[in-house]
Length: 113
Image (tube, rainbow, N blue to C red; front, side, top):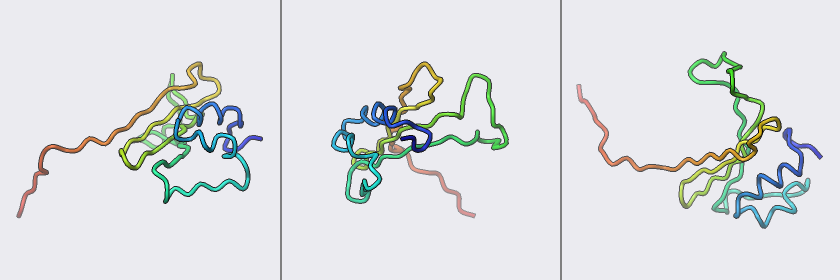
């Protein structure tokens, strides 16, 4: 069955790269599967790129593609986002994305007038 432009076999390969997803790997694609993100440390998402910033009218870039999407896992306790990009025609199926929160070590500047 295809959901969100992905085959279940592709979903299993990508979601399976997150160790925290292991308990759900055999049931996540069931129509009655419910995951409660409010009571779990991990939140799973798919992200789809739609346009480029700052010019949202650009819809094509040589050498880049908007055809794929990201399998994303956000871990609340660490404030970290990890993901894997997937596009069927891309030869690298597991391009990794890691976003970590970096605390600012300086005070913001303010000006009173």
